[in-house]
Length: 156
Length: 267
Image (cartoon, rainbow over all chains, first blue to last red; front, top):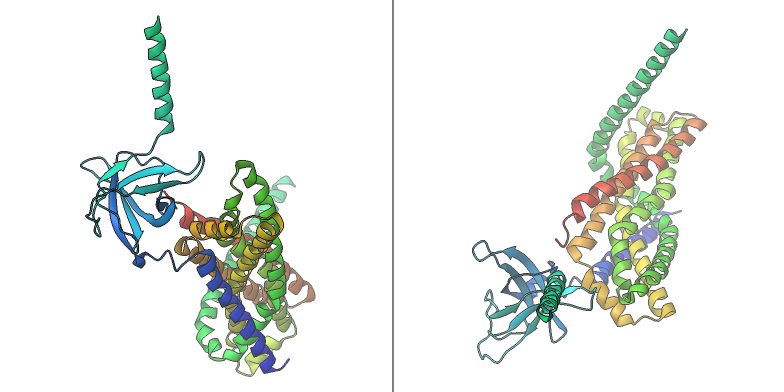
């Protein structure tokens, strides 16, 4: 095998390999649209975040507008402070309600944003006005049972 | 009688342990020597290119075909289970994550060990058996720089590219089965995949894994070849040791890397 044939095949191989890495990064990993430089950050404080995880989507009216970037506990108020990275093309009003929702019964947990009518917008690093905590199924069931028991007791 | 039998057994265990430790020491010294001679070897780019051709370009067929089939099987099996929970739209992300994080680097590494690692060992072992290595030394050509380093780096460079190609073909195979055969929505397939796969966590970690596996296989291959007994049996058992040793090391290293990389994801 002469040199130029080997060079050709090595060239083809390396080009294919680099192309595969590019494909995995862009098409599979979606490197372009998830880069953090494009988003701005806002915060929301929740009493309970349930099963929310970092990198969970942020949706407004069902449309994905950003991602959960960080979750930490405020040591003074004992609230969970969630940092949301929002796409620059979307702006939200100051009275936006952020709620933690689940898509379907077993689906992923995400943050839903519902904009209000306030003319002022949430600025970079600002905090969303109102929040609604995650619905914890166990609490709901225990409350239901408790109510049932109370009803039963009152009836007699 | 029994006392001497026990003494014999102990002697054998001792000798075996000593041999193993001596070999480990030689392997470590050899590794350092390969790295020390790498610059010298890499200067002769053409030699390394030739090894990339033999280790990488000639492995393309087996990697591409097995990647395609692994992806198609993953899609069929994954669909069967996911649709029970009404989550068949998550097929794309499931296949992509399993390929990028585990199957791509590991299976490509195992195939690479048996396809290219064994060939490198046999080649170097035969060179040693036919005294080509001694002849080179005689001519003041260092076989570490001339023979070993190009093969080592050829393997290290080829392996991540092969793993990436394996994963790409797997994703494409899953696309063929999921979208074209089963009839899932193409938008949901790619959209869920893009939403669930993170560049840093999944793609980069997969590439790091494949680089580590490339180092492991190449090092095993050149060391076993260089250390082979200069006989036909010696070369054959060295080739076997390359495949067995590098396959087991890949799986063990994969466990360790996974512990470090994915332990706390999403928490």
